[in-house]
Length: 129
Image (cartoon, rainbow, N blue to C red; front, top):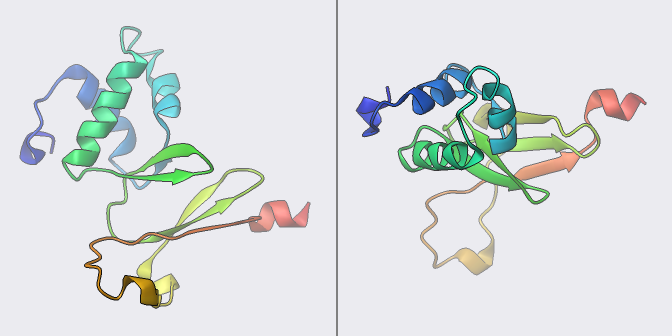
């Protein structure tokens, strides 16, 4: 998969890919580093940042920001997100779960190539508490 996206295969890239690409998930660079440092003690935060950036540039991941935190998403299909403001859980909203938004009038002459919305609030578990 890495080669087909124009990336050279290295042990570090393989480790990051094996962790985050098999299924849709949301990760931060810190989460990836903390998970891999036990099995790959020579891996650095810089390597994680560079690898995630390369994966994004090659189309394997997409990046978004929530409350000042950069999150990498292995689901690269167009979709929105919902984030719990208490427990920080993030879920994907598939296109079937969302209404088609109206483009703001101020963007009428723009050529939009990507749109992403982030809904914020309390998830059902946190709302119960």
